[in-house]
Image 1 (cartoon, rainbow, N blue to C red):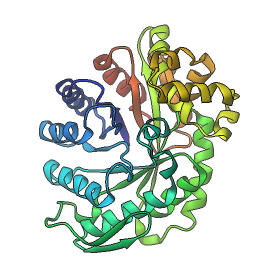
Image 2 (image 1 turned 45 degrees about the vertical axis):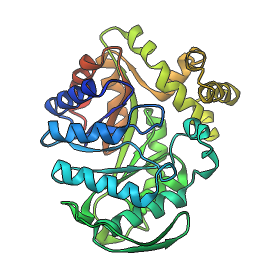
Image 3 (image 1 turned 90 degrees about the vertical axis):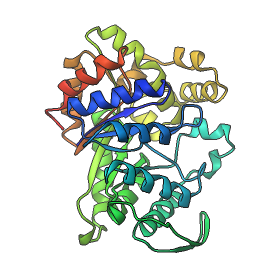
Length: 327
């Protein structure tokens, strides 16, 4: 599976054009990031559904804290109906740096994610739901049936060991936030542990590298464009991940503090070459091709994520050419 992430930091008409371009370039799925400080992802996905024919569409990833899980399930079902059965539900614990601005940093965890998508699956199957746990619902149901019903794929976004194993046991895929083969090798070990407890009737499961990619013919320009997403990834990286790549945790904490304060330029300036190497496939098409080949030893799919490159339109095509043969 080859997917692409588009971020609603750009005007929606341009994003729709990029999504149409991605479908033509051969991508299988388009995911929209979900951050309160960008444009609304559901508005973007709805417009893209009307402009495309075959590519799968979904949030990459929504979280069950900003929006009640029952409402979130209805949003995905609506997208599935609008796209003729092409929705995919990307759900995860969310970005800690931006959730901190909403007073939700302490709400993140595995249990709300699992309960949210299990509830969504019941709703999509036409059930009414009573739930008491990470959230409450009483006799909640949908008054319509999405085209795929309960078959809408669920892709869990996460990178902690418990989230990886939970996804392997319960979901259809794991969107693992990683660009480096070391991280994907580790993720594969966690997934394999979770698959041991997966019921036989649950179907196939895909480990998908949700990778920051910055590609351009100019190596230096590609690496410079990688600074913003690498700053966010570094700020949210767990201590074992930072240790795996030899990154100073205090430097990561400082970047996170700058991001939370809205001091983005200061955060981006503190990104080091080592951070870019660890958290992004950045460089020429050949450089990205080599990194993707190494990641493909451990992953079943790849999502080409932000920033894509210094020129978005060109990067959509360059990335597809560089990694499409591997995924």
